[in-house]
Every structure is written in C-alpha cells, then in structure tokens.
Length: 229
Image 1 (cartoon, rainbow, N blue to C red):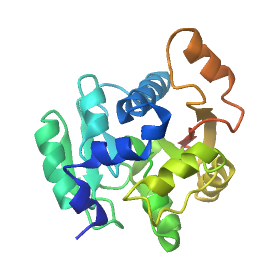
Image 2: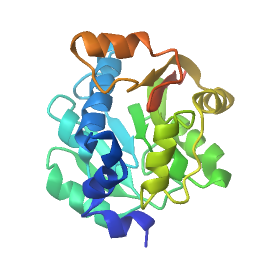
Image 3: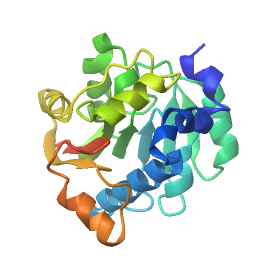
C-alpha cells in the first residue's frame, strides 16, 4: 500500500494543519500553481485537446482547476485510494494507477507533463528514472513543469517537518532540480521562486513576480523542454 493511501481522504486537512502557523490554507497554494500552469500551457501552445499528464496527481486537485479548458488531462499516481478519490472529484479527467517507475504512456505521446511537489517523494535512487520516463513520454518540443518546496525558505522547511506525509521527503533546491533536468536531456526555459507573497493578481501578484529571482519563495517552479530530436 502506498504511503498516501492512508491520507487520500484527509489530504487537504493534513496540509492545512502543517501550514496553520501561516494563516493560509492549501487552496491559496493550489490556485497560485494552477495560475502559473495556465500561463505556461498557453505561452507554449498547449492546445485544449493536447494530452497533459499530471505525475503524482493525488486526489485530482489540479485536474479540477484545469480540465475545463484542457480536456485531455490524465493524472497518474501510485496511491490506489487517491486515484479512486480523484475519479470522484473530477469526472472530466482520466486517472490511472501505476507502480511508480514505468509511466503508462507510449513514447512521444504527451504534449506536457507537470509534477507538483512530487519529486521530493521519489526515492533518491529513482530520480534518474523519474526524469527519463518523463522525457520518454513527451513528444519532441513537449514541456515539463516541476513545482517543488524551496528548502532555502525556513518556513517551508518547518511546514514540511510538520506534515504527516512528508516525514521521509528529500527536498531539492532549484539549482539542483535545474541541473538534474539538464543532465536528463532537457533544456531549461524558465526558473522562478514563487509565493514569496501569497498572491498572483493585483499589485501583490506583481511584487511576487518581481521577487521571482530571489530564493525567498515558499516554492519554486522550473519549466523545461524536450528539444526536437
């Protein structure tokens, strides 16, 4: 049984408990990352019918946010209970279980992949396979967007330490993620720290954008591309 099977029905409350000291809710972070994903998909020509894969989809949180526009979304996860809950939460997307190593897609069949706070749960010895599988399923020119916790932010580290399903997490910094993606054969399109200020719109959202080069954000994102072969 996956570690996340036992948290499938209580995921949001567990995250909310871990960040309660901030006065924020998990929805704030979800909306922010969905905002950045929409912008990246649109800027990189990901069409509504293109296949998009969410690696480590959990209970379908981002499919709920995005599937109204991108109708060919597929979430995959090692947690069977999370997949079952995701199917209940979002009927517009497809959800598949997998064993955590070989992703259930043909080579070069996917336009975009995203992984949100998933990489730090992948066993260290499987990091190379994790990235090579993403590269395998992406079509030439396809993109991958990775969002991760910023280990250089002390409040983020505190939240991770308080989270019941992050006990064995191995956080990686933005430079490390960028380097490993390059070693896996991707070209880096964009790197940014996000959520220095928990906003995406208005003046506060612009300030958060101005702070993107600084390692003050609670999380970060890296956008990479599989070049035409």
